[in-house]
Image (tube, rainbow, N blue to C red; front, side, top):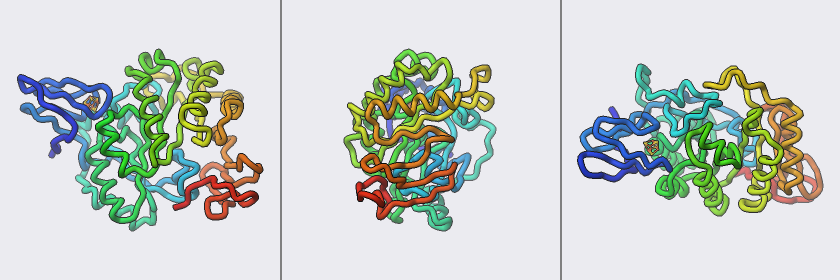
Length: 332
Ligand code: SF4
């Protein structure tokens, strides 16, 4: 049964305006929003994915990726279907670009997901795989129950949520990894069908909040890999968000992408170059997937957390560097 949405306003003639993300879709009676998982029925907006996770899995928190938040722990990851973006490079497109039609999914209450996290020894729950914004009501109810049960909540997001959505999520959110796909508005327009500025604004807001923030940039050859753009992106993080915000650069895998299968793989040399650009810009923590993944103390250089893929060996002392006691990772 679809649940009534919490983020919309009524307009004349049974039209509604969704205010959950920066698309602010105006939706006529009987029609869905651009994400295809919010539908206007008789002048009321309903969410189609409340209570219908497509995937629930126990993941290393490093897989989100979060490297400075509960390192070495597992997180119960849940995702539904739908997305407010249309990225040709999407690697989860089978769920992100689905309206749920034809999926036969059992209903899961928020409480049952929290209980599963407790039963499987996960100290956190991640809203991930597809965009949490488009299942915000379900995510918020999970987060509320998770907080009561002493669990942390994580979002892995494209950062295109509205201020209304962030107002509701921020008090319940402990950590987030937000994609900053490019510093070029033209990339966001052409590849994702949206705008860059709302993402930058949300990143600034999250960086000022108590939410632990990390950022990911997927290096797509020929689209989001120019050194000049990456310099601007790394400088934005350093200057506008703070040099201590971890930046992950990750590799594109064309054969599982939605519409960019003729694009080459990201070369290791490109990941290394992006890493160097991040360090040159003054970022304290830069990670290149599959290669440069250890957390080193920016003050004395000691290895604080060692990683070989998802195998994690913490050397920290209570979240601090074992050499000079600088606080580096959050452990509770
Ligand atoms: S969540 Fe975004 S894309 Fe979906 S209906 Fe609302 S405004 Fe439109």
